[in-house]
Image 1 (cartoon, helix red, strand yellow):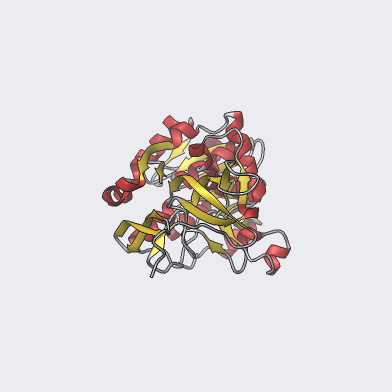
Image 2 (image 1 turned 45 degrees about the horizontal axis):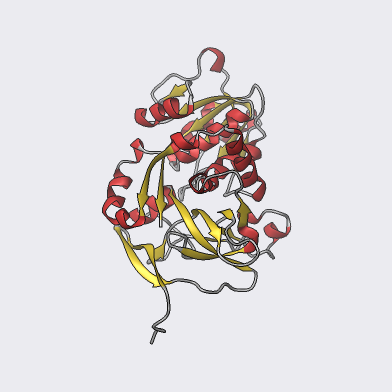
Length: 336
Protein backbone atom coordinates (compact mmCIF):
# COMPACT_ATOMS: atom_id res chain seq x y z
CA UNK A 1 0.00 0.00 0.00
CA UNK A 2 1.35 3.42 -0.92
CA UNK A 3 2.28 5.87 1.81
CA UNK A 4 -0.62 8.32 2.04
CA UNK A 5 1.91 11.17 2.23
CA UNK A 6 3.64 10.16 -1.00
CA UNK A 7 3.54 13.05 -3.43
CA UNK A 8 2.39 12.41 -6.96
CA UNK A 9 3.10 14.22 -10.21
CA UNK A 10 1.61 14.30 -13.68
CA UNK A 11 3.60 12.61 -16.48
CA UNK A 12 3.18 12.50 -20.24
CA UNK A 13 3.04 8.80 -21.13
CA UNK A 14 2.80 7.09 -24.50
CA UNK A 15 0.77 4.04 -23.51
CA UNK A 16 1.02 2.37 -26.90
CA UNK A 17 1.23 3.59 -30.50
CA UNK A 18 -1.41 6.26 -31.02
CA UNK A 19 -2.25 6.57 -27.31
CA UNK A 20 -0.78 9.45 -25.27
CA UNK A 21 -2.09 10.26 -21.79
CA UNK A 22 -1.27 12.33 -18.74
CA UNK A 23 -0.92 9.96 -15.79
CA UNK A 24 -0.03 10.30 -12.11
CA UNK A 25 3.19 8.74 -10.88
CA UNK A 26 5.21 9.09 -7.66
CA UNK A 27 7.30 12.27 -7.52
CA UNK A 28 10.94 11.37 -6.75
CA UNK A 29 12.01 12.50 -3.28
CA UNK A 30 15.55 11.11 -3.35
CA UNK A 31 18.14 10.36 -6.03
CA UNK A 32 20.71 7.54 -6.25
CA UNK A 33 24.28 8.35 -5.32
CA UNK A 34 25.85 10.50 -8.02
CA UNK A 35 22.46 11.53 -9.38
CA UNK A 36 20.59 14.80 -8.84
CA UNK A 37 16.90 15.69 -8.67
CA UNK A 38 15.81 18.25 -11.27
CA UNK A 39 12.49 20.09 -11.35
CA UNK A 40 11.62 20.23 -15.04
CA UNK A 41 10.94 23.68 -16.50
CA UNK A 42 10.37 22.97 -20.19
CA UNK A 43 10.35 20.00 -22.58
CA UNK A 44 10.82 20.02 -26.33
CA UNK A 45 8.94 17.59 -28.55
CA UNK A 46 11.07 16.11 -31.31
CA UNK A 47 10.88 13.62 -34.14
CA UNK A 48 11.74 10.78 -31.75
CA UNK A 49 8.60 11.54 -29.73
CA UNK A 50 6.48 11.61 -32.88
CA UNK A 51 7.97 8.27 -33.95
CA UNK A 52 7.18 6.80 -30.53
CA UNK A 53 3.57 7.95 -30.88
CA UNK A 54 3.42 6.43 -34.37
CA UNK A 55 4.96 3.12 -33.25
CA UNK A 56 7.99 3.56 -35.48
CA UNK A 57 10.77 3.62 -32.87
CA UNK A 58 12.86 0.42 -32.91
CA UNK A 59 14.33 0.62 -29.39
CA UNK A 60 11.36 1.32 -27.15
CA UNK A 61 9.06 -0.59 -24.83
CA UNK A 62 5.61 0.79 -23.98
CA UNK A 63 4.36 2.42 -21.84
CA UNK A 64 7.01 5.13 -21.74
CA UNK A 65 7.24 8.59 -20.18
CA UNK A 66 8.61 10.53 -23.16
CA UNK A 67 10.70 13.69 -23.27
CA UNK A 68 14.45 14.10 -23.67
CA UNK A 69 14.83 17.77 -24.69
CA UNK A 70 14.84 19.13 -21.17
CA UNK A 71 15.61 22.13 -19.02
CA UNK A 72 15.05 22.41 -15.30
CA UNK A 73 16.18 23.69 -11.93
CA UNK A 74 18.33 21.66 -9.54
CA UNK A 75 16.06 20.62 -6.68
CA UNK A 76 18.53 19.88 -3.87
CA UNK A 77 22.04 20.53 -2.63
CA UNK A 78 24.28 23.59 -2.87
CA UNK A 79 23.21 24.36 -6.46
CA UNK A 80 19.47 24.33 -5.70
CA UNK A 81 17.63 26.61 -8.09
CA UNK A 82 20.35 26.58 -10.78
CA UNK A 83 18.86 26.44 -14.30
CA UNK A 84 20.41 23.55 -16.19
CA UNK A 85 20.30 21.83 -19.55
CA UNK A 86 19.83 18.08 -19.24
CA UNK A 87 22.01 15.85 -21.39
CA UNK A 88 19.63 12.89 -21.87
CA UNK A 89 22.28 10.35 -22.92
CA UNK A 90 23.03 8.24 -19.84
CA UNK A 91 26.29 6.42 -20.60
CA UNK A 92 27.89 3.52 -18.75
CA UNK A 93 31.34 5.10 -18.36
CA UNK A 94 33.16 1.78 -18.78
CA UNK A 95 32.78 0.63 -22.41
CA UNK A 96 35.49 1.34 -25.00
CA UNK A 97 33.62 4.32 -26.46
CA UNK A 98 33.18 5.94 -23.04
CA UNK A 99 36.81 5.34 -22.10
CA UNK A 100 37.85 7.03 -25.38
CA UNK A 101 35.80 10.13 -24.61
CA UNK A 102 32.82 9.24 -26.78
CA UNK A 103 29.93 8.73 -24.34
CA UNK A 104 27.50 9.91 -27.03
CA UNK A 105 27.92 6.51 -28.71
CA UNK A 106 28.25 4.44 -25.53
CA UNK A 107 27.71 0.76 -26.20
CA UNK A 108 25.23 0.57 -23.31
CA UNK A 109 23.62 3.98 -23.70
CA UNK A 110 20.27 4.67 -22.03
CA UNK A 111 18.50 7.68 -23.54
CA UNK A 112 15.91 9.40 -21.36
CA UNK A 113 12.48 9.08 -22.91
CA UNK A 114 13.54 6.13 -25.06
CA UNK A 115 15.36 3.35 -23.20
CA UNK A 116 14.17 4.64 -19.82
CA UNK A 117 11.45 7.04 -18.69
CA UNK A 118 12.03 10.62 -19.72
CA UNK A 119 11.38 14.10 -18.43
CA UNK A 120 7.83 14.99 -19.48
CA UNK A 121 6.97 15.33 -15.81
CA UNK A 122 7.53 17.62 -12.85
CA UNK A 123 10.74 16.06 -11.50
CA UNK A 124 13.37 13.58 -12.66
CA UNK A 125 16.65 12.15 -11.35
CA UNK A 126 19.66 12.62 -13.64
CA UNK A 127 23.38 11.82 -13.28
CA UNK A 128 25.15 14.91 -11.96
CA UNK A 129 27.57 14.85 -14.90
CA UNK A 130 24.66 15.19 -17.33
CA UNK A 131 23.64 18.62 -16.05
CA UNK A 132 25.12 21.76 -17.62
CA UNK A 133 24.58 25.25 -16.14
CA UNK A 134 22.45 27.37 -18.46
CA UNK A 135 23.39 30.83 -17.22
CA UNK A 136 22.11 33.58 -19.50
CA UNK A 137 19.43 31.40 -21.11
CA UNK A 138 15.71 31.24 -20.48
CA UNK A 139 14.14 27.93 -19.50
CA UNK A 140 12.63 27.70 -23.00
CA UNK A 141 15.98 28.33 -24.69
CA UNK A 142 17.65 25.76 -22.44
CA UNK A 143 15.11 23.13 -23.50
CA UNK A 144 16.15 23.71 -27.13
CA UNK A 145 19.86 23.13 -26.61
CA UNK A 146 19.78 19.34 -27.03
CA UNK A 147 18.24 19.26 -30.50
CA UNK A 148 20.54 22.05 -31.68
CA UNK A 149 23.52 20.15 -30.25
CA UNK A 150 22.73 17.25 -32.60
CA UNK A 151 23.41 19.55 -35.56
CA UNK A 152 26.40 21.19 -33.89
CA UNK A 153 27.95 17.75 -33.33
CA UNK A 154 27.37 16.75 -36.95
CA UNK A 155 29.04 19.93 -38.17
CA UNK A 156 32.00 19.38 -35.84
CA UNK A 157 32.33 15.78 -37.09
CA UNK A 158 32.29 16.93 -40.71
CA UNK A 159 35.12 19.44 -40.51
CA UNK A 160 33.16 21.79 -42.77
CA UNK A 161 34.60 25.29 -42.84
CA UNK A 162 34.83 28.65 -44.52
CA UNK A 163 34.05 28.61 -48.22
CA UNK A 164 32.87 24.98 -48.31
CA UNK A 165 29.71 24.13 -50.21
CA UNK A 166 27.34 22.33 -47.85
CA UNK A 167 23.98 20.74 -48.57
CA UNK A 168 21.57 19.82 -45.78
CA UNK A 169 18.85 17.42 -46.89
CA UNK A 170 15.83 17.59 -44.62
CA UNK A 171 14.55 20.93 -43.28
CA UNK A 172 13.06 19.67 -40.03
CA UNK A 173 14.38 20.84 -36.65
CA UNK A 174 17.54 18.70 -36.80
CA UNK A 175 18.23 19.80 -40.38
CA UNK A 176 17.73 23.46 -39.49
CA UNK A 177 20.06 23.11 -36.51
CA UNK A 178 22.68 21.50 -38.72
CA UNK A 179 22.29 24.24 -41.33
CA UNK A 180 22.62 26.98 -38.70
CA UNK A 181 25.87 25.61 -37.34
CA UNK A 182 27.27 24.90 -40.81
CA UNK A 183 26.59 28.55 -41.62
CA UNK A 184 28.31 29.63 -38.40
CA UNK A 185 31.31 27.52 -39.46
CA UNK A 186 31.56 29.62 -42.62
CA UNK A 187 30.04 27.22 -45.14
CA UNK A 188 27.88 28.26 -48.10
CA UNK A 189 24.73 26.41 -47.01
CA UNK A 190 22.02 25.01 -49.28
CA UNK A 191 18.94 23.13 -48.03
CA UNK A 192 16.93 20.48 -49.86
CA UNK A 193 13.52 19.20 -48.80
CA UNK A 194 10.48 17.67 -50.44
CA UNK A 195 8.22 20.07 -48.51
CA UNK A 196 7.85 23.61 -49.84
CA UNK A 197 6.39 24.56 -46.45
CA UNK A 198 9.49 23.47 -44.59
CA UNK A 199 11.73 25.30 -47.05
CA UNK A 200 9.59 28.37 -46.52
CA UNK A 201 10.19 28.15 -42.76
CA UNK A 202 13.94 27.83 -43.38
CA UNK A 203 13.80 31.09 -45.30
CA UNK A 204 11.48 33.13 -43.09
CA UNK A 205 12.72 31.93 -39.69
CA UNK A 206 16.43 31.41 -40.33
CA UNK A 207 17.23 33.48 -43.42
CA UNK A 208 18.32 30.65 -45.72
CA UNK A 209 17.87 31.52 -49.40
CA UNK A 210 19.53 28.67 -51.31
CA UNK A 211 16.67 26.21 -51.19
CA UNK A 212 15.97 23.21 -53.41
CA UNK A 213 13.47 20.42 -53.96
CA UNK A 214 14.28 16.93 -55.28
CA UNK A 215 12.95 17.67 -58.76
CA UNK A 216 15.32 20.62 -59.21
CA UNK A 217 18.42 20.32 -61.41
CA UNK A 218 20.85 21.23 -58.65
CA UNK A 219 24.21 20.42 -60.24
CA UNK A 220 24.48 23.44 -62.51
CA UNK A 221 26.59 26.59 -62.55
CA UNK A 222 28.72 26.98 -59.42
CA UNK A 223 27.29 23.70 -58.12
CA UNK A 224 28.20 21.66 -61.19
CA UNK A 225 30.89 19.69 -59.36
CA UNK A 226 28.72 18.99 -56.33
CA UNK A 227 28.91 19.77 -52.61
CA UNK A 228 31.91 19.38 -50.33
CA UNK A 229 29.65 18.07 -47.56
CA UNK A 230 26.17 16.60 -47.70
CA UNK A 231 24.38 16.30 -44.35
CA UNK A 232 21.39 13.96 -44.32
CA UNK A 233 18.71 14.82 -41.77
CA UNK A 234 15.78 13.11 -43.51
CA UNK A 235 15.70 9.66 -41.91
CA UNK A 236 14.78 8.34 -45.35
CA UNK A 237 16.78 5.71 -47.23
CA UNK A 238 15.87 6.98 -50.70
CA UNK A 239 16.88 10.51 -49.75
CA UNK A 240 20.22 9.31 -48.39
CA UNK A 241 20.96 7.36 -51.56
CA UNK A 242 19.92 10.32 -53.72
CA UNK A 243 22.47 12.45 -51.89
CA UNK A 244 25.53 10.47 -52.94
CA UNK A 245 25.59 11.74 -56.57
CA UNK A 246 25.47 15.31 -55.21
CA UNK A 247 28.83 14.87 -53.48
CA UNK A 248 31.91 16.57 -54.93
CA UNK A 249 35.21 14.76 -55.36
CA UNK A 250 36.96 14.67 -51.99
CA UNK A 251 33.69 15.29 -50.18
CA UNK A 252 31.88 13.79 -47.19
CA UNK A 253 28.39 12.50 -46.52
CA UNK A 254 27.35 12.96 -42.89
CA UNK A 255 24.49 10.77 -41.69
CA UNK A 256 22.81 12.83 -38.99
CA UNK A 257 19.61 10.81 -39.24
CA UNK A 258 19.35 7.06 -38.87
CA UNK A 259 17.35 4.49 -40.84
CA UNK A 260 16.71 0.80 -40.25
CA UNK A 261 17.19 -0.02 -43.94
CA UNK A 262 20.37 -0.96 -45.78
CA UNK A 263 21.88 1.92 -47.76
CA UNK A 264 23.31 1.27 -51.23
CA UNK A 265 25.72 3.28 -53.34
CA UNK A 266 28.04 2.76 -56.28
CA UNK A 267 31.46 1.80 -54.97
CA UNK A 268 33.12 2.93 -58.20
CA UNK A 269 31.59 6.40 -57.96
CA UNK A 270 32.30 6.62 -54.25
CA UNK A 271 35.89 5.43 -54.68
CA UNK A 272 36.80 7.82 -57.49
CA UNK A 273 35.58 10.70 -55.32
CA UNK A 274 37.68 9.45 -52.38
CA UNK A 275 34.53 10.24 -50.45
CA UNK A 276 33.79 9.64 -46.79
CA UNK A 277 30.67 8.52 -44.94
CA UNK A 278 30.55 9.89 -41.40
CA UNK A 279 28.05 8.73 -38.81
CA UNK A 280 26.98 11.36 -36.29
CA UNK A 281 25.17 10.23 -33.15
CA UNK A 282 23.81 12.39 -30.32
CA UNK A 283 26.20 15.04 -28.98
CA UNK A 284 29.01 15.68 -26.52
CA UNK A 285 29.23 18.19 -23.70
CA UNK A 286 31.34 20.50 -25.87
CA UNK A 287 28.51 20.53 -28.43
CA UNK A 288 26.01 21.55 -25.75
CA UNK A 289 28.39 24.28 -24.59
CA UNK A 290 28.90 25.45 -28.19
CA UNK A 291 25.15 25.76 -28.66
CA UNK A 292 24.66 27.69 -25.44
CA UNK A 293 27.45 30.11 -26.37
CA UNK A 294 25.83 30.67 -29.79
CA UNK A 295 22.44 31.35 -28.18
CA UNK A 296 24.01 33.84 -25.75
CA UNK A 297 25.64 35.66 -28.69
CA UNK A 298 22.29 35.88 -30.47
CA UNK A 299 23.47 33.69 -33.36
CA UNK A 300 20.51 31.28 -33.09
CA UNK A 301 16.94 32.62 -33.59
CA UNK A 302 15.47 30.60 -30.73
CA UNK A 303 12.30 32.67 -30.43
CA UNK A 304 11.55 32.18 -34.13
CA UNK A 305 12.07 28.42 -33.89
CA UNK A 306 9.38 27.99 -31.20
CA UNK A 307 6.11 27.26 -32.99
CA UNK A 308 4.00 26.96 -29.82
CA UNK A 309 4.18 26.41 -26.07
CA UNK A 310 1.69 23.85 -24.75
CA UNK A 311 0.74 22.94 -21.19
CA UNK A 312 1.14 19.24 -20.42
CA UNK A 313 -2.56 18.97 -19.57
CA UNK A 314 -3.46 20.10 -23.10
CA UNK A 315 -1.12 17.70 -24.88
CA UNK A 316 -3.28 14.52 -25.07
CA UNK A 317 -5.90 16.40 -27.09
CA UNK A 318 -3.28 17.90 -29.42
CA UNK A 319 -0.64 15.21 -29.89
CA UNK A 320 -2.24 13.53 -32.91
CA UNK A 321 -2.69 16.85 -34.75
CA UNK A 322 0.92 17.84 -34.01
CA UNK A 323 2.09 14.61 -35.61
CA UNK A 324 0.00 15.36 -38.69
CA UNK A 325 1.06 19.02 -38.93
CA UNK A 326 4.83 18.58 -38.71
CA UNK A 327 5.44 20.46 -41.97
CA UNK A 328 3.99 23.60 -40.38
CA UNK A 329 5.94 23.57 -37.12
CA UNK A 330 9.55 23.63 -36.03
CA UNK A 331 9.62 23.21 -32.25
CA UNK A 332 6.81 22.64 -29.76
CA UNK A 333 7.70 23.25 -26.12
CA UNK A 334 5.72 21.72 -23.24
CA UNK A 335 5.45 23.10 -19.70
CA UNK A 336 4.82 20.56 -16.92
